[in-house]
Length: 324
Image 1 (spheres, rainbow, N blue to C red):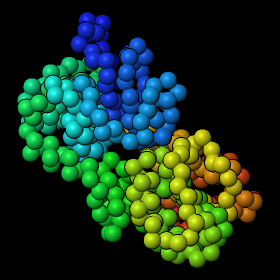
Image 2: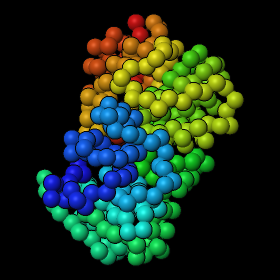
Image 3: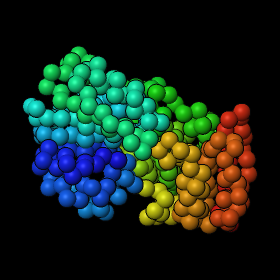
Image 4: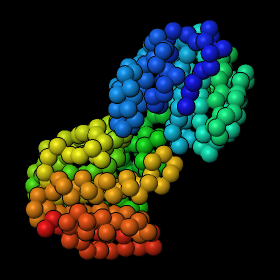
């Protein structure tokens, strides 16, 4: 986490932008820090801690821009460029990353463009900062392009969101086996950039309304673009599914996440299943795809769902369940 010691206090500017913002007690005394965070659970934590949040990256200039990147290389480099674009003359870029996320590699990348890196290491993390007034604009131009929309099989995607360089094979397996009889009000949990939603709308003519729930605001923005060709009622929710759903559904489809950051988190998938079970009508259908080794069958039974395995391959399994 980004933080300053007391001896650094005189060097801290009044204003700062925090890209990938996460709360920390050391930030509480800061006069003016505004955070941008596309992931709903982390954005909620930032707001709950009392910090100012911006929905979109602001166009203004700041004397300091702090960056706490995710695990995507393209995302991190694009964020470096977006940070540079928001620095005042003489402004400083400050980055913090775990060593396990490639902090050393990214420090070297930034040094190629800036050349005046100052770095410290502590708690298996690395923080490095630089003035960018004389940075290599050609390098930053290439990094800036990494953050632009890209296309996968006709779908718009963006670096940093789930499955941003290919169609997820688990989602493809589920799409290939979608039953055409799904009907009524349907939800796509962890909808990403809309691949499964698009498949449902094409295959299931009796879906009356489709609700997408997605924690990554960037992915949800892509989903809006990717589903704009469909004329049925579609709603988009920037939402943390683990906190529950606002409605009850005839059917729910999902490829549940099972990572928190870089760590495997089976409980995250189980939380999705529990919420889905509580949000189905009696007789409602749940379709999900998951890695074969993930122990979701017991979670389905514990939630009062009768389940069966539709198919599987070497990596994934496709489960169908019904609320008793």
